Amino acid sequence: MRSVILMYSPWRALFFSGLLLFSLPGISQVNSPFSRFGIGDLYNSRNASSRAMGGVATAYTDLQAINFINPASYSKIGFVTFDVGLETEVRTLYNADKSESFQSANMIFNYATLGVPLLKDKKKTKTLWGLAFGIRPISRIRYNIQSSGRINGIDSIQSEFRGTGGLYRGFLGTGFSIGGLSLGINAGYTFGQQDINTFRSLPNDSVFHFTANFNSNTSLNKFSVDAGMQYELKLSKKHLIRVGANGNLGGDINAERDIVSQTSFLNSTGTADSIDVVERSKLFGNYTLPASYTLGLAFEVKDKLFLSAEYEQTKWTDFRNFGRSEQLADANMLRVGAQFIPQALGGRNYFKSMAYRAGFFTGKDYVVAGGEQLPLRAVTVGIGFPVKRYNAYSTQFSTINTSFEYGRRGNSSTLFNENYFRINVGLALSDIWFIKRQYD
Image 1 (cartoon, one colour):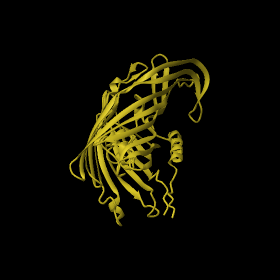
Image 2 (cartoon, helix red, strand yellow):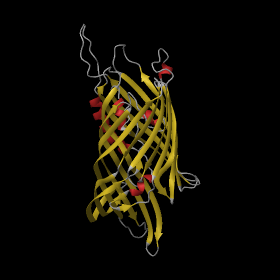
Image 3 (cartoon, helix red, strand yellow):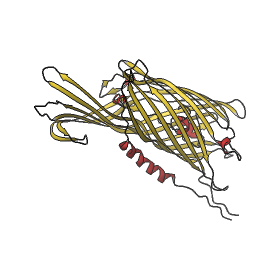
Image 4 (tube, helix red, strand yellow):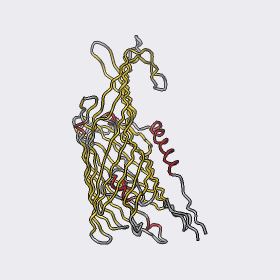
């Protein structure tokens, strides 16, 4: 008898997920004034299972989900896996005395990756060499701020500041293991843009003035590399300790900036219609991105329990924008997370086969507002739901990973505070490829 393996097409799914990644930010409604700083709001892009554990990833491995934070983990990819994540969030921004508040919502793809095991050991029981590629967001810019005042001897003035854009990273990485040591590297292409508009008008009952519009559009791109390692120390047949480290050296990213000063008219939709261009110029330079590193430690009971903690630091004081420094601070973050699976194979009890996850993180964002660096902390929970195979002979394994995150940026002494709630859903579709057809 001839056996046939039925498979989905992750290549096509990755392509369409990439298209959605760029289309969804265009319909988002988020409005965060903190995204004015640096390269914007830093996006906590991790797979859904990691997000549910406070974001721990440096010492984390998974046979199915792709851990692109530490490429050394690619050496543990068990199956050909397409892993994609979607996130939705609700933010509430309010001032120190909570007399004013603003709420917004946003939906965006968190990541889209494909992992492939390239080499297994002689017994075909574990992967020694793996590869992964995909795309993920790095930061996002989306704000709309209005202010009004008066210039002595001239008139009242009204200003509006708008910003959109963000950075993305496409990557191709590989990881291999020798004994208990795993090493990995990601080669990536970082790209994106920042579109900053400043509108200034002089409201006057007797004299009409057109609005002044100062637009700065910056395109960014660069090839970049990050690397990681993991080392496993076996305590017994099922117990082990894993140490992990990953990071990058930062460096310059190419920047091309178009600057336009013009008079314009704001129509009923809020769009600026150009009246006359006063000045146009183009600049070529670079942004200097900071180096970062993360150290992690994990304790694992095979197919049962995972506990991990990690510390991350990024030198944002080294950031430069066309050679100019900004009021940013070095960011640091402590993450702690856990996963528990009552019975990995589950048997007939589905709830025992689910992965239960929880964690938290606490630290400081790189944003400095009102002279104070903003603290950032959150708690997370989540569940991994294995999807039942359609028959006993199927080689497809699928898991739906969920995470729920509630966090806060700022505190009672900062000028503004931001609470947020995020829901992340990841779908990991796996299959066993490259098996020869068999006859009997």
